[in-house]
Length: 257
Image 1: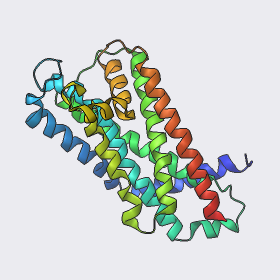
Image 2: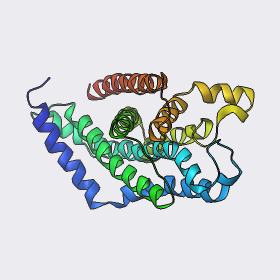
Image 3: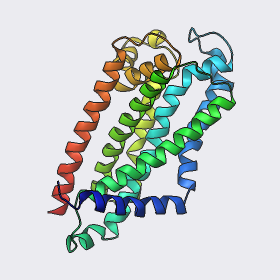
Image 4: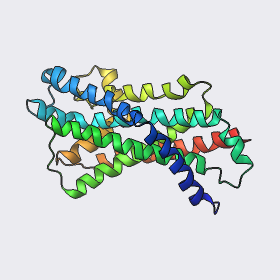
């Protein structure tokens, strides 16, 4: 790794974080849609959904929150693609070619900025969940597991967002890639158990990554046995992360050349 990598990444991350701090509305916007979905399901639709967790808003928000957290990240990473696209269109890479700057530090700066921004958005969403009844008696190790899974998931989706940020031809194209990611939790166990779903939909819901991750998070937060489910969730997160990093790095090299 280039000896300038760490210093260059720190400088570029500060630059990117400064841009975010100057427009904090992006973080608030990231949290608004997940919060709206959470309120809609908890207070409007949640009463008609049988999760087996008992009645009431409190029990349903406990069931719902893991999926809402994934939607929050999926919404937030669209800004990563957007900011990277603007940097490319502004000629940032061309300027850096003539400077002794580690090339990959540009990508890592955007990834780390996304990680920080998404953590803030997640905290806001959890705060609203607590206000409407979310409670968890999970011990510290379980919470550390939740944080670890969420960080891995956020990194995986952020690196995935780097790809359209590098390849998009318009601002709309750079950010629109996140729409399927936001929709995916609706075809999982995030909002309701998969048992009542039609055959093909149920099969898809039970074998896609969101269900494994949501079930692992929910088990940790509700003090239920996790079993091998946590390893399935971690495998999905790590697998998606490795694949996204490899594709993003290859795309970036092609862009530079």
